[in-house]
Image (cartoon, rainbow, N blue to C red; front, side, top):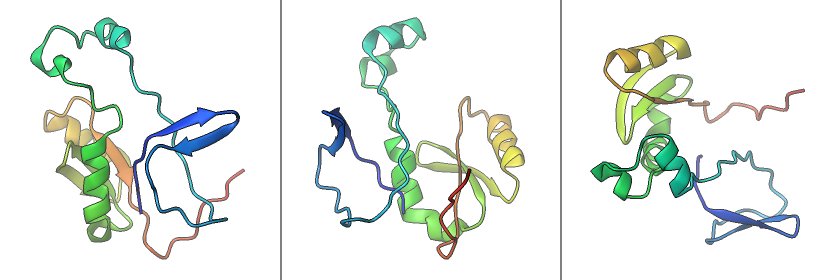
Length: 124
């Protein structure tokens, strides 16, 4: 299951800013993404249009919500999302990505949906 929360790093400890319902002594995979500042948005050319006046969705909240709701439907596949809209899916991640680009999505959010019975990745 994918859950998106905001956290702050203080005194060597990452502290969730909301009640996340984590299990004690349970291991979690964490992806760290620092939110863009207003000056970075201006440098990237996002300032000045109506969408830039809103906070950018650097956390991909709509995509994470979609994954939470629909992951069981696409287990073992790659998905490409544009917000909360599924653009492409299939077994080949590159093909899924390029199908989304061909559909006009500038920066598709792509993810591999692990089957529920998949073992956690230990890696080197």
